[in-house]
Image 1 (tube, one colour):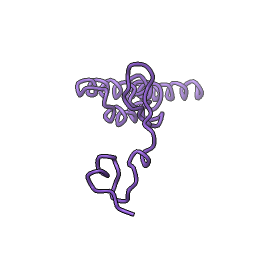
Image 2: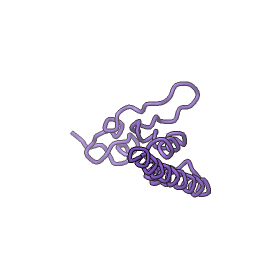
Image 3: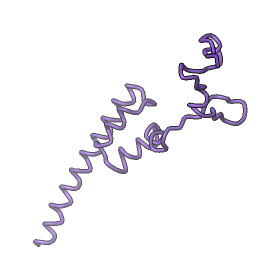
Image 4: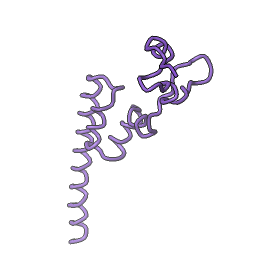
Length: 113
């Protein structure tokens, strides 16, 4: 048996062990229609964390200022938008805390008479 020459192995996409690289990587999956770019196999939570709407919902409906690190790791926001939304989320969170404090004192006054 003769070994294939390195030129023919390289042109066929084979590595030094004689295994075709396409066999190792599996078939390439493409989108239907005119876009033939490979489909990314990102987990659903990764694409959700890159959604502007999801990040703003987390900032204002969920964790408040604790969502700011998610805002800064999101690549879809510009630096100007990041600063703006971080400031707004911080002020929003502080106002909610102040309202909660006022409500507790008001409730205490109502209970104590």
